Length: 423
Image 1 (cartoon, rainbow, N blue to C red):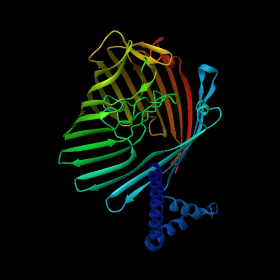
Image 2 (cartoon, rainbow, N blue to C red; image 1 turned 60 degrees about the horizontal axis):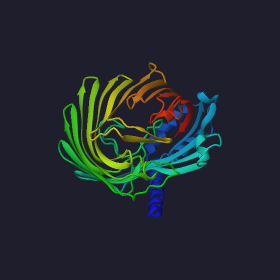
Image 3 (cartoon, one colour; image 1 turned 60 degrees about the vertical axis):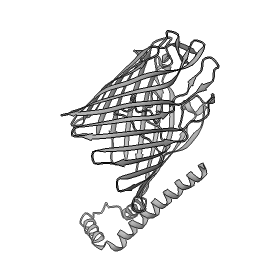
Image 4 (cartoon, helix red, strand yellow; image 1 turned 135 degrees about the vertical axis):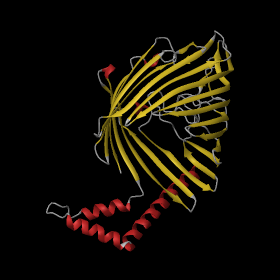
C-alpha cells in the first residue's frame, strides 16, 4: 500500500513538472508579443558589464518554475555546556503544486535531513527522508474532497484545546506534523460541514518503546458558521492521543482513543481578535497509584490576537481541568512519576514585528507551563537578504521546577542559527 502511495507521489511530481514545462514552451513559441517586449527592454538596458550568459539562467529558471526548492543549514550550540554543538544539520525540501484535471489541485513536498556527526540526533540516525505534504483536492459545486498527507487545524488557537488532530514536533519545535488523512467538506451559504478520517494516526513515543495496544481509527466532524465579524464551529470526534502514555503499573505504553465534544469561536474588534475554544474529553488515560484508569477532562483556552501594521501580539491562557480527581493521580516522567494537579494552567505571550521598512524582523515569546512547572523564554531575529536568501538567529532559555514532570528542561539553553536558500 505504501509503495503504491509513493509511486503515486512520484507520478504526481512528474506530471506537474511536464505540465509546467509544456506551458513554458507554449509561452515561448506562441506569445510573440511578450518575447518582443522583453527583447526591447534588454537592449535598452545593455551595457558592457552585462552577463552574456544571462539568457541561459532565465531559460533554466523558466524550465524549473514548477519546482519549489529550499536548502537550509542549521547550527545550534548549548551555552550551558561550554557552547558545545547541539545541532548541525542540512535540510533539503523539494516540492511542487498545480492543477490536476479540470477540478483538481495537488501539492507535494519531500524533506530530506542530513544529521552531521556533531548533531545530537546523529546518535539515533544519520539521515532521514519523509513526505512532508502530498495531497490531491477536488471541488465539485458545493463539495470538496481531499486525500493525502497534510495537516488539519481544529479550533481557533494553534496548539490549543481543540487543535489535537496533528501532533507537534515537541516543546522546542511546536510545528505540526502532517498525517495521511481523507477529508470532505460541504459548503452552504453561511456555513460548512466537514468530515475527516485517519486510519493510522501518528503517535509520539520513545523509539525504545512499542505500543501495547493496537492501532485505532480516528475520525471527526466539524460544523462551522460564519457571521459578520465573527465565526463559530462545533466539533465532535473519536481521537487518538498524540503522545503515548506510560502505564506505571506494567511499564508499557498505550494510546487508546478518547471522545471529544467542542466549541470554538472568534470575534473581531477593530485591531484585535478574541478567540475562545472549549473541549470536553471523555475516556482519557490516567495513572493512579497501582491503577491505570480513564478520566474525563475539560480543556479551554482564551486568546487575544492584536495586529497593527507589521506588529502582531498574541496573549493566551490555556487550562486543563480534571472532572474526576483523586490525590493519588500520577504523571509519568523519565525517572519515575510525580503527583498530578487537578487543574493545570498555561500562559503565553508572543510579539512579532519589523524594524521599520527594513528587511529585518524580530520576535519574542514567554510561556509559563503547567502551573509554573516550566518557564520558557525565546527571542529571534530574521533577515530577508533577498528573494532567495534568508538568515535567522534564535535564543531559547528554560527554567523548570525540580521533581516535576518538566524538570528535564531545567536550565535548557540554545542559540540557533539558520541560513536558508529557496527557489
